[in-house]
Length: 173
Image (cartoon, rainbow, N blue to C red; front, side):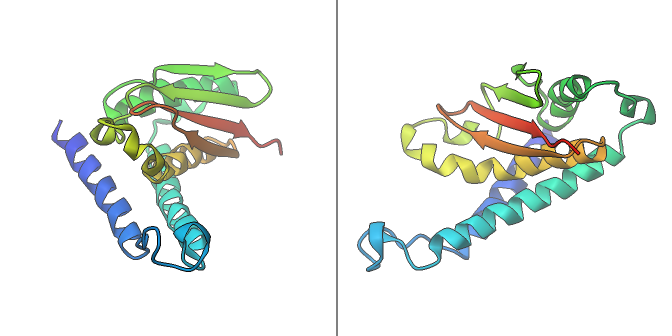
């Protein structure tokens, strides 16, 4: 239990620290359209990239620590099932709620009460802030998949807090 709380605090502080260096000036402060500073979107994209990169490295490290017998998966679907059950349980102390596929290399992993979004689930005003709290986890999934020999692109979306969906698109090599 304490590990989960420490991880949530660490994750929240990583996000806060990255966004503290690129504060949003708010509407009316800049002459740019929609109240954005020149390059503000670039700075935010860079912050998302940094979080995703850190998550990727953590995912690789977790994948390297897996027992060798677990690495002998026969199909992509088996690997994704492993991520949804065992890896998610090890990180978030719960399993992913659903895994869907179109059997053509696209998988949708759904978590209806994602632990990193629970603190902001009180209102819709936080919905636009949610993506920055998902970048690390996208990288984590991509890093674990990479270690298991699967190149992929992972994106996340939030329709209603605290639920989220991760879309994994397998890259054919």
